[in-house]
Image (cartoon, rainbow, N blue to C red; front, side):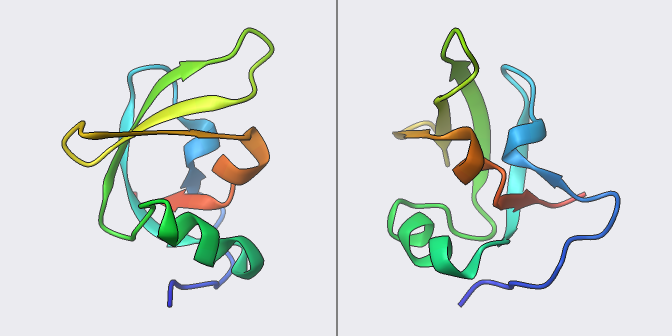
Length: 85
C-alpha cells in the first residue's frame, strides 16, 4: 500500500508540474483515492509527465512510464500524487 504520510513543506504533487515537466511518483496522499490511482498505473517509482491541460486547467493529461500509457485526471486527483524531490 502506498505511503499516506503527510508531505513535507517542500513536497510537490503532479498538480505542481508545468507542461512537459516530469517527475517520479513517491507516494499517494489520499488513502481513499490511492487504490483507484494504483489501478490506473500511478505506482510509486513510476515516471510521470504532464502532457496537457484543458483550457480551464482541469482535467490534465499525464503520460506514465515510457510513454505507452496516457491518463486524464481531475486537478484534485493530480494533487494527491506526490513526487520525489
